[in-house]
Amino acid sequence: KNEVEQSPQNLTAQEGEFITINCSYSVGISALHWLQQHPGGGIVSLFMLSSGKKKHGRLIATINIQEKHSSLHITASHPRDSAVYICAVEDTGNQFYFGTGTSLTVIP
Amino acid sequence: DSGVTQTPKHLITATGQRVTLRCSPRSGDLSVYWYQQSLDQGLQFLIQYYNGEERAKGNILERFSAQQFPDLHSELNLSSLELGDSALYFCASSVAGFWGNIQYFGAGTRLSVL
Image (tube, each protein chain N blue to C red):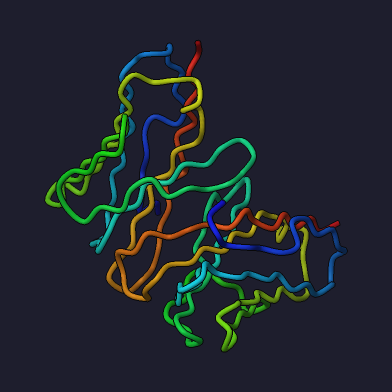
């Protein structure tokens, strides 16, 4: 049973394209996290959301608590955005559940 | 650089052995989290410590244990190692122990059990 489902699993885009990665979850959450993992393996936290929408530069994350769904958008994608993007949810018992990740490749 | 230090970077050992992974959190962070990332299971939450006390436990095997010391560094002990324990182990830290905190990840320790 997967508490967190991400789609798509793989995504290839041309530089400049608008990208959307989706995350659906089945548990009650206290927060949702979007993580970025580069080919070298390092993980960076991009966003932590409990409601609404957040924006950092070209990245936008939204969450709909009622529908148990979040999206990560990348505007004007660039080859340096190529990475694996992972959705993680945190429940009120401090448990964390991870999606399997979306592997993004942006072609120049 | 996240400010979270994990050592060693790589560890190669044999089945049945015991290893210790070390994590130093960012200065001022009281919470430490341990995660395992394997090819077949993806990322899994193992355990969280806050200011020296265990706060939450995830899918941590009984052969694994962790602790957080008074100086806030943490160690993850893996014993009776099996081939399936080969994975990348990440430590992360955050300022507080309650939910909804941004976590800062270390570079990970890659464990290979032969």
